[in-house]
Length: 121
Image (cartoon, rainbow, N blue to C red; front, side, top):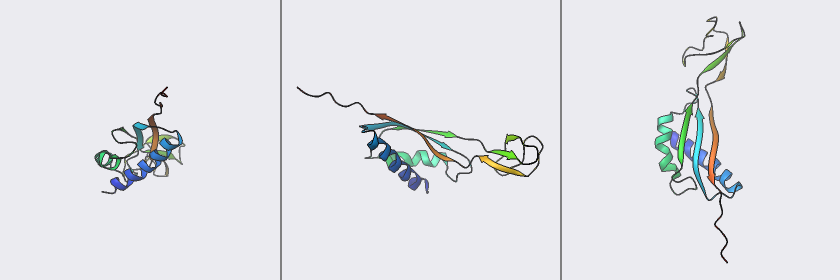
């Protein structure tokens, strides 16, 4: 289950972003995963509570958005959705395609609590 190490790497990045913004806590994280990324969304979701325990993102919501596989056809010039194991053009059916989406693992957004406690008089 390499998703735990992927999650730990993502949380290091989230921790750096939170530190840059002097956040007290991270309340939500959104990631986008393509089916060809090599990361299983369900396993990433299972690893998140373990990896985030004791970090600035402890208790944060993890939102996982899955992306479609899309190809650009070198023959007809169209962009279309494709199956994971058949990267054929959806318009003309040609196999001369180039992957344009579906292998991503992106940290899309981080929601943070940045309010400071009121100063005491």
